[in-house]
Image (cartoon, rainbow, N blue to C red; front, side, top):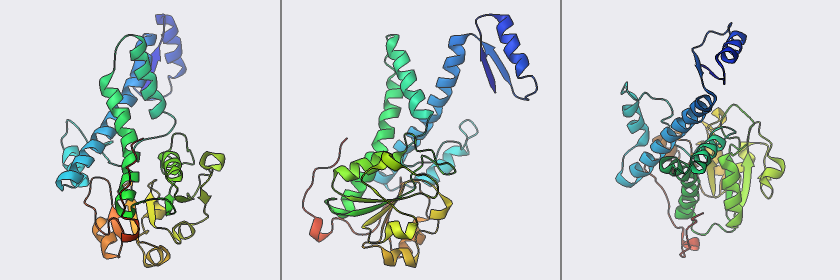
Length: 281
């Protein structure tokens, strides 16, 4: 679609003429409505993402599988299957920026956008839950080696703006963990200061106590291999994108945690089982 906001009809017509060769629906409206269309569209997509992530968290509590739930929801023609993939949360240059812009716009006008505030909070919660799952399996994270696999905010790009990997690396380092990071194209540089950047998946998981799938790169679909299991100090995979098949991964000898799926494997290893306050921010 092409959305044109103009103060005068002749201005809108002139802009529409510029795009005359493009086959797409055209919406001509006032400037405020045009801006709201863009912000509201992205906010609605973010709402779907945070909604399915909340459903995933409930699925973990009650023993359901969010992948199956999303499939069933998506078959309803009123809803459709898009943006119903549970995971570690959204990032990138548009969604975080637009959600905060719309929330602030509403606030400046005297309205508290409660739903959007919840969407943003749920997105942050998804990163905290990864840390909590690591703590559940490993106990204290100080001195533990954690491999972050995938750094860009989504596959197919090197864009790390507002990427979940940045939040995870920062929190893991604050907990005293050793972070080993890999991505096929993204190069974080100073954005991930303190982490060890690796040239291959095998290098990243070597000696690791856990591997966290942060970005849904195809290169990670074969992660549950004998070579990877043998290289890790503890064969634990936290699958933040539900990229792997849980049963195949478990049969390959890994403890596995997805998003909205049932976990398996060791918990609170004896040498690290002493109580520890959970990360809440």
